[in-house]
Every structure is written in C-alpha cells, then in structure tokens.
Amino acid sequence: MLFSQRKKLKVTLLHLFVLCSAQHSAQPETRQVNGIVGTVFYFPERVLNSGNLLYGDLGSIAHVYPGKQSNTNLEKRYKNRLHWNNVTGVFTLSDLQIYDSGVYTVENTDEGKTKHIFQLTVYYVLSKPQVTVHDNISCSVMCSVENGREVTLSWYKGGEILNQTSSPDHNITLSLPLKVDEQNRDSYRCEAANPVSKETAVVPHSCIESDPSKVTDGDERTRDCLIIAVICVLVASGLVGFAIYLKKRRDRHSHADSPERKQDDVQYAEITHIKPAENQEERTGIPEMESLKDNPNLTVYYTLQLHHMPASEDVDTA
Image: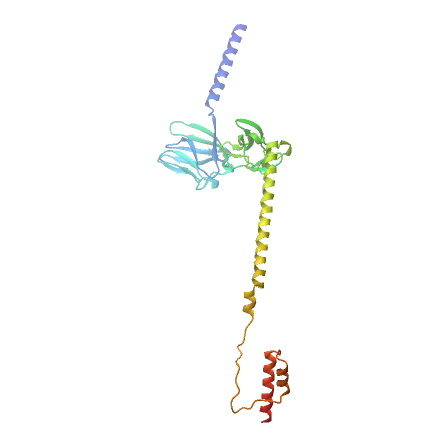
C-alpha cells in the first residue's frame, strides 16, 4: 500500500515537471535590438498574410489582413512612421525617437500562431569628445562629452584603459581629467561610447611639458644662445639705423652751407651808365654830388639815390 502511494506521487510530480517544461518552452525568447534616433528600424520577423505588431501595454499597433491589406495607423504616435511591406512582409518604424524604446511583439498567424518578442532600445549618436588643456605646466587635460543613455567616457593609453566614468543623469556633461606623460603623449586617447556609436579624441599638441626642473643643460645653453643672438640682432639694427640718420643729417647741412647754394640765393642787377645828353647841362653845385667826388667809396645805391633826388626836385619845380 505504501509502495503504491509513493509510485503515484512520483508519476504526479513527473507530469507537473513535463507541463512546466512545455509552458517554459512555449514562451518566446526576448531578443535585444538597438536603434538610432532619426533612422529606420526593420523588425527582423516577417508577416506575409496575416498577423499583428504589438507594443507593450498598448496592444496591437498594426494589423495585417489576408489579401495583402494592412492598417498601421492604429496609434497616433506612430502615424505615418509605421509601415508594412506587402512584398517582404517586414514592419518598419521610421524617424526613431527615444520614446520608441520598449517591447514589441511580431505576431504571425499565417500558419498557426507564433510570436517573436523584441526589446528595442533607441540611442543618440555620440558627439566627438572635447579635450582641453587644464594646466600646461603639469600637462593636465580634461576630456568632456554630452551624457546620454548608457554613455561611458574613458581614457586609454595604447590598449590599456586608465580610468572611466558614467552617470545615470542624462542632462549633465561627463568630464574626466588626466595627467599626461609628455614622453608618451601620442599614445593617449579619450573615448566616448554607447551601444551604437563610438568617438575618440587625442591630446592637443599645445600641452607641452614646461617644468623648469626637467630642463636639461643642453636645453638651457640653447635657450641662452638664442637670447644672446636676439639681443645682438637688435643692437646691430639700432646702430645701423643711427648711422643712417647721422649721414642723412650731415648731407643736409653740407648742402645748406655750400657756396653754390649761397650763390644761387644772391641775385645781381646789371647797372647801365647813361651818358648825359648834349642839351642837358651837367649838374653842378649839388652838395650831394660834391660829397660823392670827395668820397669815392660811397655805395652804388647811395649814388643812385643822389641822382634820383635832384631829378625829382626838377619835376616838382617844373
């Protein structure tokens, strides 16, 4: 009696195990798929004659009827964006947006009823991260990028990851600092990534190691030679300019003091001696004329005045 009861219990448990296994196998597997904002997503399963496309709690958002007929405008949010191709049997969702993410089910009733479930996640394409020099002396840099869904920001040296950051707050800017070894500057890169895109940036060449303690004797001598050379060039240029100035000044003074210049400034007037006419009596008894005879060193100008004054008196007495 006890043996038969145990046997019945085992059979019952076996039936329950088979039933649970069948139910588990009947549950379709959810496939993870990704989309990009602004692009078109093609659902991987086809509906050739009849079926539905369902979304989350909304239920059916598109119907396909026998005879290649369909209705894809059941929901306002998908109007003019959700389509069914009557040749390929594929559903497409265009102009993807972040809010289109969710669970979609392609239900095919062509031969029996099958379901294919897809977890769609829509992402933005990342912008290129920006690397700025934070401190030239220590060659410290900062890498930044706009945050978004599942965005990570990382510093790499060759193939080795140095540090990484992320944040669930999609409204902030991710930033990651790094102190760069100048000797291996070209081996560093900053990488921003999400499941659909990846962008990288390198350390700018303006980040130059300038720590005085790391300046070698050769570098110091080279710097001193350059400074001396610059000073010599400046002094030589000043001396040449001063010499040119003195030469021009001396030439101007020589030209101003030359006899030719003075001779050009003096104008001579030709004096013509007019002999008195026969009917004109020689003027005598004029005191000024008598003084001229007594003093032959009087100037020509004074003599001309003496001739003019008696003539004017004659005109007035006439």
